[in-house]
Amino acid sequence: MSGQVGIVLVSHSAAVADAVASLARGLAGGGATAPVAAAGGTPDGGLGTSSELIAEAAKSVDGGAGVALLVDLGSAVLTVKALLAEEDELPEGSRLVDAPFVEGAVAALVTASAGGDLDAVVAAASEAYAYRKV
Amino acid sequence: MSEVTEFDAAFFHRWLTRAAAVVDREADRLTELDAAIGDADHGANLKRGFAAVTDVLGKEPPETPGAVLVVAGRQLISTVGGASGPLYGTLLRRTGKSLGEAPAVTLPELAAALTAGVAAVAQLGGAQVGDKTMLDALVPAAEALGESFAAARDAADRGALATVPLQARKGRASYLGERSIGHQDPGATSSALLIGALAEVADA
Image (tube, rainbow over all chains, first blue to last red; front, side, top):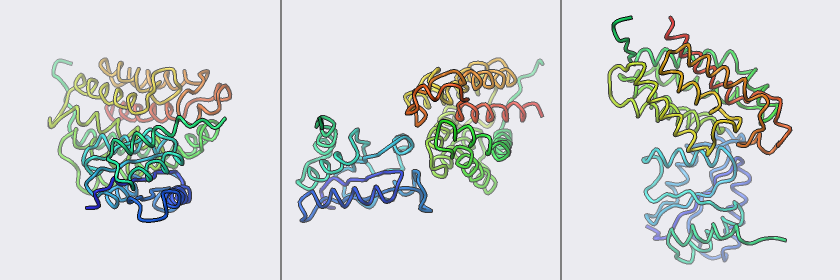
């Protein structure tokens, strides 16, 4: 048990999910970070959403403190919601986070790495919506 | 008709097998509709999903109508890869759960369960009738199903056609704004095909 909240990044593209995961790791301080897993694209490498990849990723980052799932578009949102409604598909304490994908991923990982609980991680990621750019 | 007709697991298995055949036949048309206002994968995605459904149902057919629909719904969520997977998956799963463990169901029971399934889809996608989505076919179909299978089919067909002049407010088509007007919604079209398959099987 890591005791830290796990982060799952769900994108339609494996490249996007992987890149955002490494960006978040890099910006989260360089040292040991909370577990983060990418679930991008379909199992055959195409663009889309895979419930299997999402479930696997969530399991891989689950240390018992909850799992925060950040998603990009359309079917990524709907698939995670449908999995959560199923109840036994994702680890206990899994939560869909309403947050911008890139900014939210960084905020979530920084907070989880600092030992924040699931509520704190979700709040930090959601707050990223408030950082206006112009 | 004096005695009450009931529909068993085999009936629902036949429905989904028929639906898979219809989706397979119409996949290119669905993808064409989706190319106009979506990302041109609706036909291929549904074809893959329903092929997987018939596969899993053929291997070990569930024994109740509810179980058939729940198994099929789960299969759609895990194999479709696009937004129609979780949406149709939720439709079938929630309809199946509403049917419970009854070995056979009546038309009014099915109509009530489908209404619950459609409500779950509306909640999942945050859409309502008029948003140019599958709900434009499913909502009137579920309402008409209390009357008859044929009425449900006609209502779904009318609902799908009625999406042509609408502006999309959900999904990828909504990014097109006014440019989505004038195209029939692919999701409403595939919904009408599924309800049509149901009416066909009930007729046979």
